[in-house]
Image (cartoon, rainbow over all chains, first blue to last red):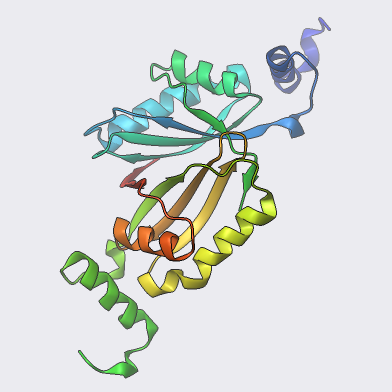
Length: 110
Length: 110
């Protein structure tokens, strides 16, 4: 498929396919919770800046970061995201300047 | 205050006051993310059962468990809750049969 008139959605699906090595539909998008450590004393504005840095590039990987929660005393941040794979979530966080290897695919939710 | 006609809301506020050692209003309720480990291979129905066990007694401590996400491969569960204190969240989880010491007060959210 080399037709560039396909539009952003199909181009995004191609990225997803590359990541898992097979074609899949948008409905294959999974939910992820990731954990960052070391955000001691970070302010609300700084967390928003970090989150905005993710949002600015997340479409490159078909990822969307929905919410983030921070405990500035323990330095922990939890991010809820959807996307095609753990690796896609990790790549966006790494490019945005806050890498983490602790990304969980939370396939069950209540 | 010994007037038992105050109703459930005021009795709940009393529990909250006892926990922090000072009076505070409902608006002092905080948000918590807690983490459980060892839920390997747990099913959706089993997670719902655990969550329902929390919901059945959470009012005793003025806590509310909003959502829970599970990765059955790593055995991690993340619970989002509101309540008066970390200790109140911990007590409900312990009484419901799934204690954890890993409870974070996530005071900042984006």
